[in-house]
Length: 238
Image (cartoon, rainbow, N blue to C red; front, side, top):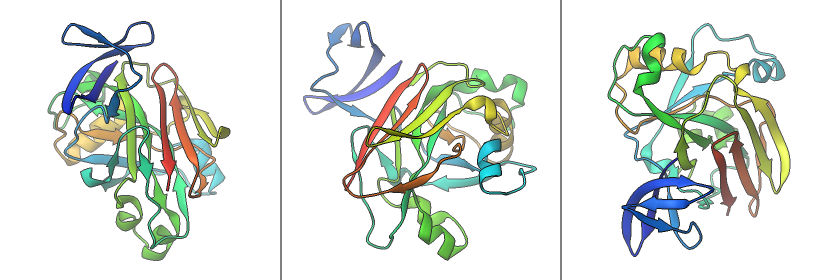
């Protein structure tokens, strides 16, 4: 697993495993006491809407013919364990647990069959959304872009993205439980489609969409997104 962290005021990178903790520059460090940062610094966060079959069924919406794309700004990024700030402009802030793809090499107009060679790995993502503002505005930019509305991490791992369990918990209660096999557009297809529109740079993040069970967060809640073989992203609402 690829990890970024802060130690003695210095940003460092390394690898993480449950067995050995963090190894950085030949030094073995314990996870406890370190400030874990978002595992990469994307120039852009490309998100996909309505990309689980059962989520579309839940909303009684037809399956999209092409991926539905929107962007979150880098200013929305939040570290693991960080605080999601409930904006005063909204009265309904929702969680959306997702698998995220992290790009490893610059790519443009990549075909699906070659997509994997451009992927650094995968991580957990929470597409926090001011749902009332999304409905009010009729488009998604404001609702998705508040500071702290893009938590992701805690590290980047290599997994099979075609069949990974994904789960979201609020205050320890399971609210979303699915598998990426239910994706309408799989990861290679998403990389192909998105890179046909825009150049993807190393560190860019693709959030692949959320399964059914989206719901509301309240101040004081803890929210966790767990993905099989990666780990758990936890944040708190204030």
